Image (cartoon, rainbow, N blue to C red; front, side, top):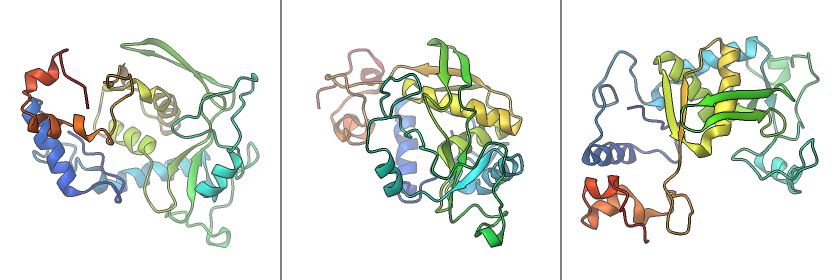
Length: 259
């Protein structure tokens, strides 16, 4: 059990405790975790900053990342028009829209990281840091559930954030660093994160890590075919428990999904 509680604004101790309680009620057990300890502790990402900082240093020294001072407002303005890919097709927006390259340095150049440049080579805070993807490279991997997957860097996804200006490492960097440190051999997650796998393959390569096996499963959806999210509180485990459902009800194919 690894608690991915990086965002201090959205993650609270009581939420983490409730999540573990709900999973235990559902019948899920784990051998290592925040409540049990284990050889790769701590198991809360909020306590593993040193691990992520080490990975950030390696990416910086290898010339894989660059500082980006674009704010969300800047990016929203640059991306206000539909994104057009290199083949002329309109692409739907990803969870992280394709970066327009505003702060991207010329290929082969490494931006200065020094106090004179307003950057601290030992502290990533104060600016966003992006991983420069190899434009045009096709990334393929065999998903253990969905078969062969194929994404093109610069077309399906662009330069992505690995560290935020407020001092929080990204999901992509934290998961890659933790999977390697905890010797994870198989990653199971939702099909909505297939592009994240392509990004993480690039990070693994840059950091010298081996890729785990990947298994992307279909999402649980409501009666309208929309995936369940935090806003669907009436279908949370806690709410279903309160309605009198049993773990067997929830794990069966007959789960009522009407909100």
